Image (cartoon, rainbow, N blue to C red; front, side):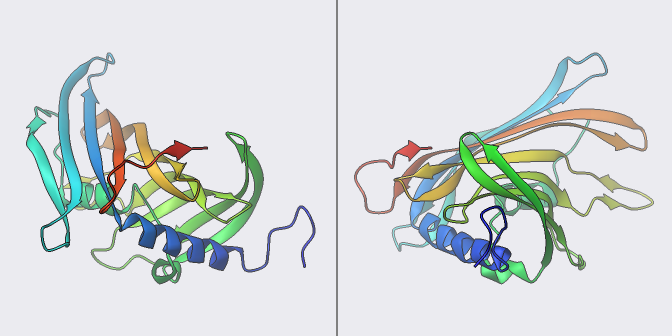
Length: 227
């Protein structure tokens, strides 16, 4: 047993178990992912942007797939989106600390905090090591004390990639989740407004990802959100 204010000794294992259950549940839902990226000049005016929408659906063979809605709009002038950016959008921004991911990370309990009325444990997480080609998460997690669900994550994708010829830098972001059908917490919004310091000067970038229209595969009605 543990005291009223102490986390369980196996807190991260409980979180990983709940995250695995969340991942398995989410795999049975379709949803829409909308991405907006803005770039700013040094006076704070938007000078370029990128926009896309895609549906995460099931094919006629009941296989998980993605379907782009219209063609992406892209008039970014100061930055270019890379393969790593799109991998992060798919895997790191909606980060799930599942059991098969747990060995990649070390965690540290940082305390407790109420987040939008939910009593949470706060955990610091960082990669144990980063192998060539890996994209991982580093930051903070807010965990519902009742069922060990992650309800908020804040940090960035790592590593930053710098070579003698190129720079591939990544912004700090926050991902918010909401409970669906009174059970699992799914991502609903990722946002980041950050300045990246390239060798040729700083660049402010704003990114918003919205996850919407969750619908359980085979169900006739959309799921409901609650807090």
